Picture (cartoon, helix red, strand yellow):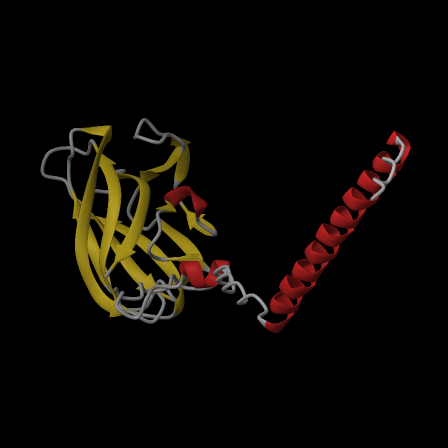
Length: 215
């Protein structure tokens, strides 16, 4: 029996390249099949939606108290807030008084040379809806011993009955300031406020820097 002659080297090399090409094509086809399978699974099972982000709180909501918190009383709207410091020299009108630089804390001016029959007027003082029951004034005096004067508070007319008043005597100096308080008739609403001054001595008896009302 005759033995076939071996193929020349070039033939083996060609067959080897064909075999490698077939293996590579087969692997590529398998990879494409796997990729198609995975894409199908992803389309069948969409990812769960991400949780929605909480909406930011509005500024007004951040400032609003929670139901468990007590809502503070609102300040009166319009006019001069009776519960803030009212400078004596801010009067709308006056009779008999003069202004001077004060040595009290905070500086500014005070009303001085207050004598019997003098007065100060303040328009549109707003007491709000919760009644004011106290009056506090920053006062100083160097009047003679035994001499006193009075500050009376009137609403809407200096001839109206006073809602309260302070009696002031010697406090040790015209710039020796003290805060004095008194109770007043409960007062609400918007009013023209008159401070009238009375003394039997006929001499100047008071310096007034500022005042305020309270509940």
